[in-house]
Length: 382
Image (tube, rainbow, N blue to C red; front, top):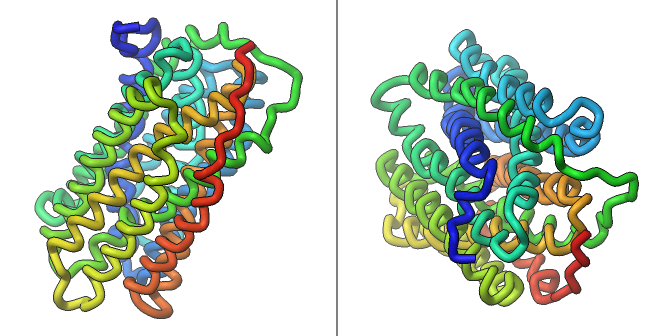
């Protein structure tokens, strides 16, 4: 029980694959929209970039469990890493919006594979008693690259150019090696012909969607919301650092106390953080720095912790043969929220203002509070 979940067989390979995959994903998440703006796109076009990425991610996530059963883990994992990494090199060829959207769509295919398989394998590799801790370790591997590149990406572009970011975006292709090794180990994962209990997975998916809508909005629009590039970078750093810490700590706490006691307060924290952000950017020419940093921190805490807690809830809601489906549904909630946060907030901001758009995002998160207060019974392990 006291052993680190990282020592479980296969976990080091999963962490390596995740670090490489999410480095490529995170590096381009804030930069691909900037590349589109560099080519002449407006705020709505910039918002579409990550929206398309997440649309194709979600569409892929719907078919990953069936693809794993048909083709096997190693081929699917390898294809996912290549689809996520190789298109990054092609960004340098054109900053035209159509080109950027097309490449984002292909990357979405790969990211859909990475997200579903990664979180499903956490549940397979580590026993339930340490699952929260294992999800925390996996969460650090996911969040670490985001700390470095989501906050640092705009700074790298401003000081070193787009080329370095595009090179970092190719890193998932290097992850083919641990992906194939991990895929061979994962062939022992059991399967079943029974339909997964999707209705039981709806609650964690919607809860996650509420907070990732807020997080996706801040990741995409932190730079244009603020009048200072340095302040935007610092705010994104606050968000991603606190998200990483919260996602890690939430794992141990959920193993000890259960996930439900923490979920509803974090929904309130999300709404509060978005309201503070809206107040901070009410004057586009004079961002209130302390409020911007506080709002980003609050959203970061809920963004990270709810990722861990809702994944724990999703795996508790199903038996072992349905972990792949639980992972797919959870990731659909994550990426749908991220995509909606990018597109919806961009459209509202384009038609009114960023403060109004942020308040709408916070209100959407608050609508999930009734679901947060429910405590359904866990499924029996197979």
